[in-house]
Image (cartoon, rainbow, N blue to C red; front, top):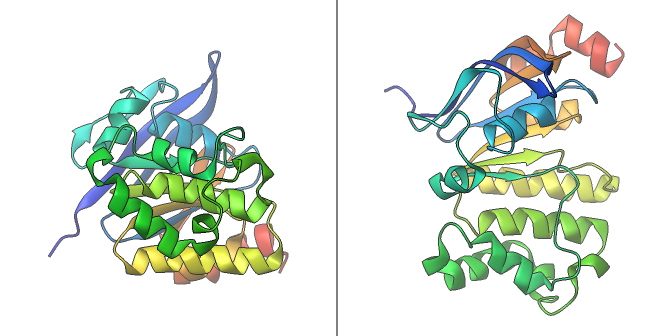
Length: 238
């Protein structure tokens, strides 16, 4: 039985002010998968996320979500369809409370399930449940990342894009974050994990892609990529 194709990116060319950053990227995520996109700073990872999420319009190529061509669609339409991004740097609303940030996650999608989704998010992140009335900007870095992911979950995503979720976290919190991602996957959520943390990302994912200078240079099963000599030289120094 063929897996359902959730996200299908074909020949994506994109950039800023007429300068191309992505040069024909092909990538897909099937239902129930964790797919990791690896690459160093400046490789084009966030550019890809922003074009897939409707924040920018690509120069060429196509993006399909559950069979619908969403190339250049508005971000509000894309979120309403169930493709949700948790951006790099958390991007919470620092002057609002934890509860208000979470409520905003269901503004475009799953508003009618807000109460039950709030219960689910606080079960996953008990610390958020203890800080509902706290101003979000006063949370620790790890708690802000929890809040950003919790806000994404409030929209009942069909596919969740996590952009550098471990960035800036302590080693202990990094372990906690990857354990959370594994839990979400076990519960059936498909994820596109965009990371620089090569080893832990590939341990978690089923498949992976390596992006360099706007091009996919390696792709395949995560277990195979772990053993690829070029990847090990470039990212692991071995």
